[in-house]
Image (cartoon, rainbow, N blue to C red):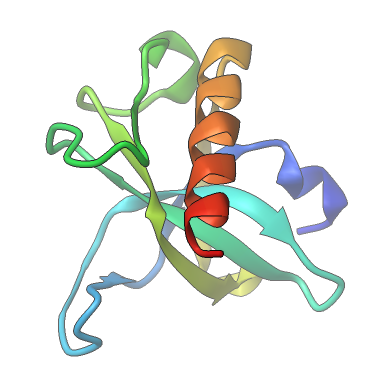
Length: 113
Protein backbone atom coordinates (compact mmCIF):
# COMPACT_ATOMS: atom_id res chain seq x y z
CA UNK A 1 0.00 0.00 0.00
CA UNK A 2 1.17 3.53 -0.63
CA UNK A 3 -0.07 7.08 -0.37
CA UNK A 4 -2.79 6.39 -2.94
CA UNK A 5 -4.39 4.20 -0.28
CA UNK A 6 -5.56 7.40 1.37
CA UNK A 7 -8.25 7.52 -1.32
CA UNK A 8 -10.84 6.21 1.12
CA UNK A 9 -10.72 2.62 -0.02
CA UNK A 10 -12.92 0.14 1.73
CA UNK A 11 -10.98 -2.97 2.65
CA UNK A 12 -11.69 -6.33 4.15
CA UNK A 13 -9.16 -7.36 6.77
CA UNK A 14 -7.50 -10.76 7.09
CA UNK A 15 -8.11 -10.69 10.80
CA UNK A 16 -10.74 -9.16 13.03
CA UNK A 17 -11.51 -5.58 13.99
CA UNK A 18 -10.90 -5.17 17.73
CA UNK A 19 -13.67 -4.17 20.12
CA UNK A 20 -12.97 -1.39 22.62
CA UNK A 21 -12.39 -3.88 25.45
CA UNK A 22 -9.38 -5.30 23.59
CA UNK A 23 -10.55 -8.82 24.38
CA UNK A 24 -12.97 -9.50 21.57
CA UNK A 25 -12.97 -8.88 17.84
CA UNK A 26 -15.13 -9.45 14.80
CA UNK A 27 -14.41 -9.77 11.09
CA UNK A 28 -15.67 -6.68 9.29
CA UNK A 29 -14.79 -4.26 6.51
CA UNK A 30 -12.97 -1.05 7.35
CA UNK A 31 -12.44 2.36 5.78
CA UNK A 32 -8.82 3.44 5.24
CA UNK A 33 -8.40 7.01 6.48
CA UNK A 34 -4.60 7.28 6.23
CA UNK A 35 -1.44 5.38 5.36
CA UNK A 36 1.85 6.40 6.98
CA UNK A 37 5.40 6.00 5.68
CA UNK A 38 5.69 2.63 7.42
CA UNK A 39 2.55 1.41 5.59
CA UNK A 40 0.50 1.31 8.77
CA UNK A 41 -3.14 2.06 8.00
CA UNK A 42 -5.51 4.10 10.14
CA UNK A 43 -8.93 2.53 9.62
CA UNK A 44 -12.46 3.22 10.81
CA UNK A 45 -14.95 0.49 11.67
CA UNK A 46 -17.78 -0.23 9.23
CA UNK A 47 -20.97 -1.81 10.57
CA UNK A 48 -24.43 -2.73 9.33
CA UNK A 49 -25.92 -1.45 12.60
CA UNK A 50 -27.76 1.89 12.47
CA UNK A 51 -26.01 5.15 13.43
CA UNK A 52 -25.71 5.68 17.20
CA UNK A 53 -23.75 8.92 17.53
CA UNK A 54 -23.12 12.13 15.62
CA UNK A 55 -19.82 10.57 14.53
CA UNK A 56 -21.50 7.73 12.64
CA UNK A 57 -22.00 8.19 8.89
CA UNK A 58 -24.63 6.17 7.04
CA UNK A 59 -23.22 5.51 3.57
CA UNK A 60 -25.64 6.62 0.85
CA UNK A 61 -24.01 5.42 -2.38
CA UNK A 62 -23.70 1.64 -2.15
CA UNK A 63 -22.94 1.35 -5.88
CA UNK A 64 -19.44 2.69 -5.14
CA UNK A 65 -18.74 0.87 -1.90
CA UNK A 66 -19.60 -2.71 -2.97
CA UNK A 67 -20.71 -3.50 0.58
CA UNK A 68 -23.23 -6.32 1.05
CA UNK A 69 -25.49 -4.37 3.43
CA UNK A 70 -26.50 -0.78 4.15
CA UNK A 71 -23.51 0.36 6.15
CA UNK A 72 -22.33 2.94 8.66
CA UNK A 73 -18.78 4.23 9.17
CA UNK A 74 -18.02 4.78 12.85
CA UNK A 75 -15.29 7.43 12.77
CA UNK A 76 -14.97 7.29 16.56
CA UNK A 77 -13.98 3.59 16.36
CA UNK A 78 -10.47 3.63 14.92
CA UNK A 79 -7.66 1.09 14.71
CA UNK A 80 -4.17 0.95 13.25
CA UNK A 81 -3.32 -2.11 11.15
CA UNK A 82 -0.40 -3.12 9.00
CA UNK A 83 -1.07 -3.00 5.27
CA UNK A 84 -0.27 -6.71 4.94
CA UNK A 85 -3.36 -7.28 7.10
CA UNK A 86 -5.60 -6.24 4.20
CA UNK A 87 -7.26 -9.16 2.47
CA UNK A 88 -8.64 -7.20 -0.48
CA UNK A 89 -9.92 -3.83 -1.61
CA UNK A 90 -13.67 -3.95 -2.03
CA UNK A 91 -14.69 -0.44 -3.08
CA UNK A 92 -14.40 3.30 -2.64
CA UNK A 93 -16.57 6.05 -1.22
CA UNK A 94 -18.54 8.36 -3.46
CA UNK A 95 -17.61 12.03 -3.20
CA UNK A 96 -20.73 12.78 -1.15
CA UNK A 97 -20.03 9.93 1.29
CA UNK A 98 -16.39 10.98 1.52
CA UNK A 99 -17.42 14.55 2.44
CA UNK A 100 -19.83 13.24 5.08
CA UNK A 101 -17.08 11.08 6.62
CA UNK A 102 -14.62 13.99 6.56
CA UNK A 103 -17.15 16.22 8.35
CA UNK A 104 -17.83 13.58 11.01
CA UNK A 105 -14.12 12.89 11.48
CA UNK A 106 -13.40 16.61 11.87
CA UNK A 107 -16.18 16.84 14.47
CA UNK A 108 -14.83 13.81 16.32
CA UNK A 109 -11.30 15.22 16.47
CA UNK A 110 -12.61 18.61 17.66
CA UNK A 111 -14.61 16.87 20.40
CA UNK A 112 -11.35 15.48 21.83
CA UNK A 113 -9.93 18.91 22.68
